[in-house]
Image (cartoon, rainbow, N blue to C red):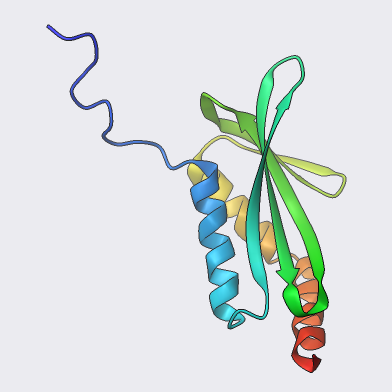
Length: 125
């Protein structure tokens, strides 16, 4: 008899960072590296420990970083989590809900306009 099940490392949930990094990688590919999206991690200790992941886009030739949104979740339980974009807060209870929410955020009119403006300005330099 063992203390832990044999399949402990199988069928693991997809962590939020994996979804965010996929979105980040896709932007770099679509813009041929003109813009690079990144996911930055921070740990905050308040009443309870939380992980924060900031999703931002950098135009290196402009020396400019555009912060789009951040998510926060508990270290031992990725979902539910909270996504904050500006003053608005959204929640996702699963990896599928997070994926849909990220698509919604990245395809919002203000984000698309900002990304297109950064591409245009970066191409000039």
